[in-house]
Amino acid sequence: MNYFCRIFISIVFFITLVSCGLPDITSITQEMNQPFITKVTPMDRKIVVEFQAQNNEPAFSGYNIYFGDSVNPRIYRVYSEQKTIPTIVTTRSTSLQTFTFTIEKNIYYTGSNVTEISLLQENDIRNGIPIYVWVSSYQITPQNESYYYYDNYVKMGTPRPEISNQTVSVNNNISLEAGNLAKLILNAADGKLYFSSPLISGETWSIQRVAGTSLYDVVVPPTEGYTTESLEVIANRLYLIKISRSSGNYYGKIFVRSVNSTSSSIVVDYCYQISADILSY
Image (cartoon, helix red, strand yellow):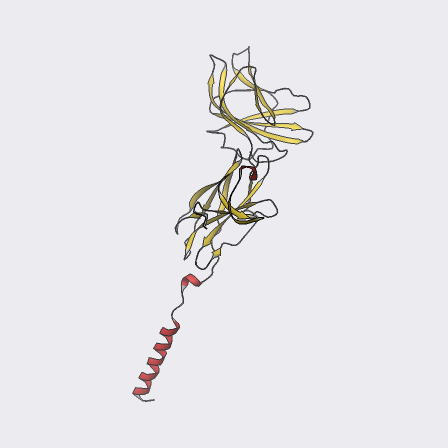
């Protein structure tokens, strides 16, 4: 082959390469790192989802929030305030990051029996009804999400009623719609305040005290560690309560903001899970 032939073949090869182009990395579908939900905090008619993730994939654009029931946690997809996806817009990162999102009324969503993006109504998220949540990593070009896994990645939270900053005096019950959590008593022997059983017929009342900074430090009720004895009321402590009835176990919490020994009163936040045997409050 002479010199001019070699030059001609080289030119043809170069033109062919340029016309075909190099691979576009944004068109390559790959498995994305799956976010991990670390905590679901129930509140009154809402839940707060906290998750950790690390995504540095090409064209990564954020995270999508899904929720539903135990059978299908992806019935509903949550949209951003601009009615777009991903739900949470963020940039690529090589380090682990923490995100939070609140599922509550007036967020945008689509899903079962919803033909367009709508606002979640107050009656759509009810106290005592478990909500199952899944979070995905999202890539916009091409449209791609992390693979769906149920075990270890779907988490549950159950909204419940709560009262904040409530003053309770001696001999009064701490009550919510589902019943009485505890009775505040003054012990004549030592002059201290105690949480005691409300003494309701057909109920077995028990309590335990743990360190805490708010009502939300513990969101999954322990099944053990309770006592039926009265416990002294101490400020900045969290009291976990279990009430056993024929219909099942009901769980509640009391966080003591302050104790006023002079007026024999306390200021508390408290909540009560209105559904039986739900390990979420």
